[in-house]
Amino acid sequence: MTRLLLHACCAPCSLEPVRLLVDEGFEPTICWTNPNIQPVEEHDRRLAELRRWCAAEGISLIEAGEDRERWERAVAPIGARDRAHRCRACYALRLAEACRVAERAGFTHIATTLAVSPYQLFETCNDVLERLAAASGLTPVIRDFRPWYGEATRRSRELGMYRQQYCGCRFSAAEAALDRARQRDERKARHRGAS
Ligand code: SF4
Image 1 (spheres, helix red, strand yellow):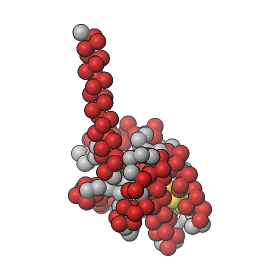
Image 2 (cartoon, helix red, strand yellow; image 1 turned 90 degrees about the vertical axis):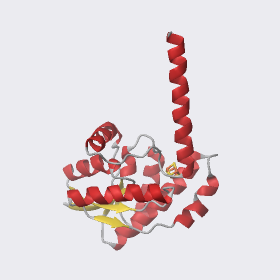
Image 3 (cartoon, protein in one colour; image 1 turned 30 degrees about the vertical axis):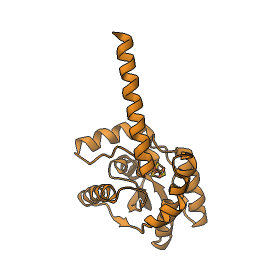
Image 4 (cartoon, protein in one colour; image 1 turned 135 degrees about the vertical axis):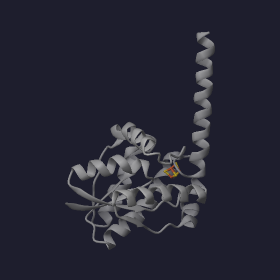
């Protein structure tokens, strides 16, 4: 089996990538490095869920460095005005740390569970991973796990896992709340139109 370091954003998003990568012949070790998640209580809740699942499944988990102040300096100033730019900077910060860990620990391959969520910027994330992996002499394992997002949702519910309502940063929390409000308004408008 080929050892692979799998950057993980949370337990629910790890379910299907781990299964699929094992089916391909990889031996994934999970790497947690997500200084983007706010507030700290939310960060700790997601990490605790990942720890529980890894322990139950016998999957190795590396808790890598997290520089929350650096995230505030490098990502937060972009704010809500340019999501693509903000997320690129956020992916770069997290995946750079994962690549650093992979290189030091002798891994040859690297991937991320961000590739399962249809809410992430898939192309941007892959581009960032490819560049950082190349700079570290690693092979990026780029896979489109998004078709398995529904299955990940189903399995995580079945397992009673904690499932978050937003990506991680305070901007994404506000954006997700706005999106839910917009969807509620649209449903109400449709309902009024039908009655
Ligand atoms: S939306 Fe997600 S990926 Fe983008 S900056 Fe916020 S936490 Fe990072």
